[in-house]
Image 1 (tube, rainbow, N blue to C red):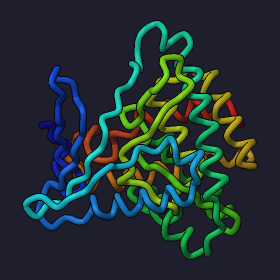
Image 2: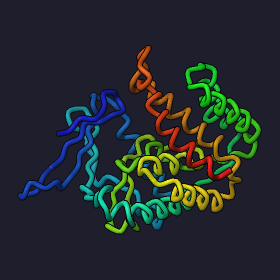
Image 3: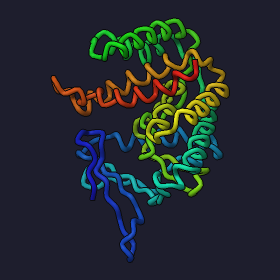
Length: 283
């Protein structure tokens, strides 16, 4: 058994093995009796499959069974092996194909699920978290100034800002490389997903997680923005909106510790530094 981070939203993971000791099934079990987050995740996956259609939903890893065990919801998945996200083959060829394929898929997901919400929804979901982060004054000075500028841009863009299906934690640790050349993949762990997400955030986070070289990141982000018909100048505002929501989420999981610059949402600062270098080449 393997245990994730403490907290009601982080399940206990169990693996069933075959006769040779290889993983055969993955079982996610609620950490506490009565928790409904895994039930909600299964319902969300049904909505995602209906929204995306067969072609795009084929990349979404879904549970094969569900049950209540000792008062705890449990979801069972067929274990999905993966080719490694490291090594010479990955760095020289597979990473490029993977990142380009991911950018293409996320653009398709965004175009399929794109919606124009009421301004009040945009303000609640995307403006308010960034307003709160800026008001705290806890960011490094240069980042604070850029966050303030992004907030101004976000307020200006609010009437036309789209919302899309967003995974919410799209690191390579939540993907499976199903072809060694990087051209095919599947995505798991949709518990943080929302149909009220913002464009660009998932892709920027994924590129950072994959440690994409700057030139590759520029290509992926540029292709994505063109397909989504979003001007490159809007990219920083979209990223800061995503960053602020993830910051609040991490503060809730790992409360910030005074004097510890790596606690809570501050864990995202190194990621922001890399993403900022990616976005700098777009404008």
